[in-house]
Image 1 (cartoon, rainbow, N blue to C red):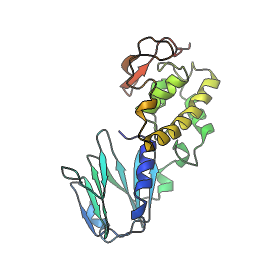
Image 2 (image 1 turned 120 degrees about the vertical axis):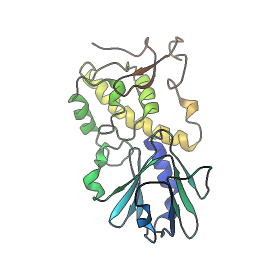
Image 3 (image 1 turned 45 degrees about the vertical axis):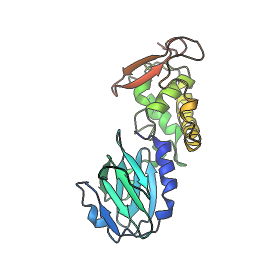
Image 4 (image 1 turned 90 degrees about the vertical axis):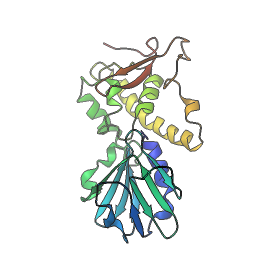
Length: 243
């Protein structure tokens, strides 16, 4: 599942189609996708893992789920969920969720919760974390209402960076650690963006998919933890379990 930084990259890659009219639409989406024919794209936006194609009066929301993908000015095998063709070029989206948003996006999205947004509000994130004392750290970093755009890679890497055991609850973490958790999540997201653009993201992983802790030279544990039950990689020796 693409995380927030990957959606930001997509948004940057499709800027050539901003202001362009959609001339042809196809795909196996059950939504009324034909309504966008002859409509002009006003802008592209992102919120966390949501890619937003904005038209006058409505928006298409693309969520890539676990196995979604896209192609720009090319196609891949298989029927796209949504294909948009322009006078010059095309956008194709596969194995993803396609939904229409009729409301104003400011009414739908809390932009300050997006870890990639210039409107990101760290103080609000800290307040949300402290209001959920029973929430596990491994779940908190996947909570899109708190850290929109954070995914499993960011979760594992941030907890490892900060020496925080994934089974800590927000009620047992020291306040300074909660603040660090919030700041480091945003910082790592922009490191992720930089490394992804340079095609070297995996080279920088310290915990995610790793077998040995580089700090302790002891085995990294892999478990499915928390309510989210996502793969979690951590070192039980240097990632501290408080309380």
